[in-house]
Image (cartoon, rainbow, N blue to C red; front, top):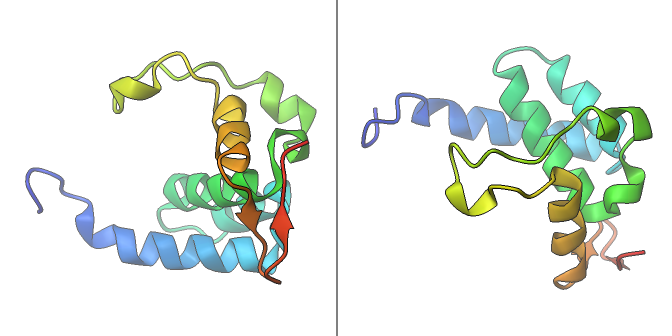
Length: 111
């Protein structure tokens, strides 16, 4: 346990699995998230990380419309500074903040 956080030992595995799913999916958000959650283990975490990476790379337009419609704004219970933000807005902010560098080294810009 690290400072009251009992899952710290899962982080290295979750990040590795998420990066693997993201890479295998070529950065496609739907494929990355589905690949990650279907690996099992800490599936919600790996899916979230893979989706965050893919969303930052491709922007909100790459998230399947049906999935986006099912997501509401963040409540801010874990990160108060995120309260009220919709995950798709955050993806666009990340892309706009400097673009994302694809696995090939190509810069991707918003919109």
